[in-house]
Image (tube, helix red, strand yellow):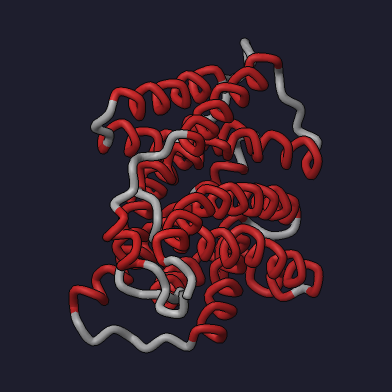
Amino acid sequence: MVDRRKLTIMATVGAPVLVLCSVLSVQTGQAIGKHLFDTVSPATVVALRLGMAAGLLLLVHRPTVPRRWRELRTVLGFGTAIAGMNLIYPALTYLPLGMATTLQLLGPITLALATSRRPFDLAVAALAGVGVWLFHTPAGVDYPLVGILFALASGVSMAAYLLLSKRAGTGTTNAAPLALALGWAALLALPFGIVDSGAAALSPRVLLLGAVVAVLSAAVPYSLELAALRRLPPRTVGVLQTLEPASAGIAGLIVLNEHLHPPQWLAIGCVSAAASATVIRPSPPDTRRCQHRLPANT
């Protein structure tokens, strides 16, 4: 029989890798989604993204609607936070991908600072914060306030998503709560998408790219994060997600031809160092708690 303690350690060590894969996937998907803005509105991209991702996960997991109000409330809050995170898409209408993603990450970084109890964790979060500060716009370039507000609102929703995702994933070994939450988020987004673009959203190109965006920036990363949050505290996942500016910068360069300035590359170095420090020296695990959360088939 495999040593359960070793399985617990392996699961805890592998959790940061799940978050990093999620970061790469979501930023690639968002860059592809921005390509669709010439054809349909950001609201339609969000509706396609959430609708297709929800359909996929609902088909795979076939969840049942919770009967207890407490569980249903968690699913509704989780889904509302997911819908709020998608305000990053209208922000991309006004801001470059790297800048919008950096502003969005103020939410998780604030969460990391607010929930930390060790000087080391505060230092890591502060380093990530320096990176966010360095990821500023070039002198003389002004971006609309509405874009900044959309990105910041998305960041608040991301912080709520981390906390609610942890609660939704506790006590379950599958992604049923995520599938239900995505379904609720899609219901919130669909009316806006239909009103904004109408029949244009049904063209084969839009549907194909919408499916790619749904898989890369919703179904895959949300599933990976839900699995990681069963083994890591929201604070640690929040700091790891500070790698998103690096991923966004690379995706913006490759997919959107958005070039970065030297201070922005230095910012990427700061957030990458913060994320690496979190992986190298994670918070001491509670072995009994981690074992309790391991899937039954392990």
